[in-house]
Amino acid sequence: MEDLKLPGIDYGALLPMLILFGAACVGILLEVFTPRRLRHVIQLTLAFLAVTASFIAVVAQHNTRKITIGGAVAVDGPTLFLQGAILALGLVSLMLIGERSIERGGPFVSQAAITVGSQKDLKQAGDQSGATEVYPLTIFALGGMLLFVAANDLLTMFIALEVFSLPLYLLCALARRRRLLSQEAALKYFLLGSYASAFFLFGVALIYGFSGGVALAQVHAAVADPQRSQVLLYGGLALIAIGLLFKAALAPFHVWTPDVYQGAPTPVTALMAACTKVAAFGALLRVLYVAFEGVRWDFQPVLGTIAVLTMLAGAILAITQTDMKRLLAYSSVANAGYLLVGVLALNENGLSSTMFYLVAYGFAVLAAFGIVTLVRDADGEATHLARWAGLGRKSPLVAAAFTFILLAFAGIPLTSGFTAKFAVFGAAVEGGQTWLVVFGVISSMLLAFPYLRVVVLLWLSEPNESTPTVSIPGFLTSAALVIGVVATIALGVVPAPLIDLTRDAAQFVR
Image (cartoon, rainbow, N blue to C red; front, side, top):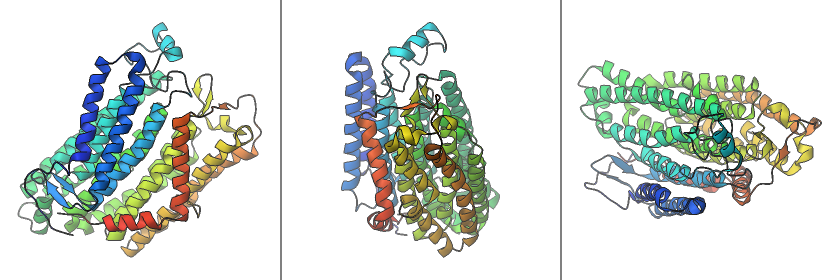
């Protein structure tokens, strides 16, 4: 790893984050000063422009390697790659969030404070335009994620964790339909997320006691030459890991995932499944590879056990699900386990393959949830698996796209899922973690069953009176689906350009 320290503040290096935070603040002002009938278009346009400008700023810094703000933020290869991935996936998520043609008024409630089940609530669920506060909240969350993957000290990482978590707690509660389920999901996410944040902060305190500082470089130096009790080190690492494992939805800290994924508005679920996973694993990579590399032999077996538990729990529990969003939630849990296998390789290939997997999975899961938004009846999205029977005969194009995405999740060759799993498993074998690969292959075989069951439902079952209709996607949803499916094909057939990019980016500065 390259050692590099630059004093002062480099605003160019911080530009992607500054753009998003600035746009979010402008979006809040627009909520006050713009007419309601124009607010959706203005806010959506501002969000697209902000994310695009931030992405351009990231690309413009592709050769930057520096530490700024007194060591609080590191701009290096992994930072820039992960920030670019968050922004690209965030842009596609915004397409799903901004869609208003599939459901009148959009997927978000107009006023969240109205009592559930009241006449006003029924009225706003029927014809009132959805809340536009979702756009500045989404931009705040994306900005916090950019800071999270760039944080070079534990206190900055904690602040970034809160910056992107708090907007997500609110977004989960804003579903237009199934309001109680949405509010329950938000409350569960908030309470469990608060506990995880508290664990993280306690861990920071213990690590400060051990190393005398919170900068990752200080922690690395203290680990290499310990001067204080190592009880503080291992206790702090365990508590910090709990906070990060919660965000990454790794067992046994995954219990929030199915309830939150099911209750949140589906576009927000897509945002969390894609972007939050990139942010969580980006921070986990930096903490393990930069700060605690010196105790790798101590945490590898523990985190390896967690990876095995996550893969098996996700695969086995996915088999029992009868709701599509919950099935995809447990699929997300299992995929978090595969990602942790790549992380635990603790070599350059492990770093690059994990980053590749995050991008490949992100585009696929956005397409999957985009299709879920299209399968509807009079009460909104029809997510019960039995309702999807025979859907391939009613809408073969949508069913074919969903089948392809499920095959990618299963790791079938010529899809991004196969390439990503092959990459992380290969890195793990190279890093001496073959036992994790064995469990990974077993869980992949188990996880193929629920995917194939859905494929059979789509194509080999007869449609009946309860089979819902498939809405005609609007322009934004169509664009999101095309991007997700094309990326899943491209990263399976010609993955070399992205693999080369991840390898070039696989070097932290310290």
